[in-house]
Length: 86
Image 1: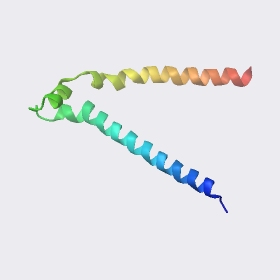
Image 2: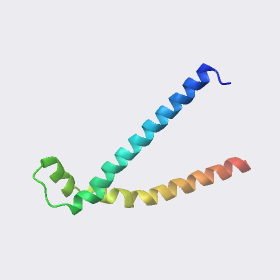
Image 3: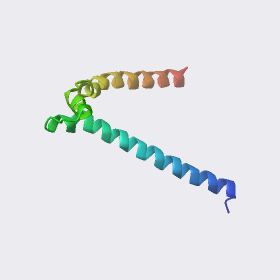
């Protein structure tokens, strides 16, 4: 039978796990709106939404980040190979 401290720790892990999942989905939705959906909508009278619609930074951010990600993953793989064989 688990002790009270183990139950509290498990409940706390579930809480923080759910929090981070909701946080990630929220930011993903915001990014998706900024990068894709706002470009498809008609021009807005709201100054903030109009600035997001005319922004080109986020449209290029993901495609330009992918090559950097590939290089980072390669260097991670290479360093793990060197560590295993050292």
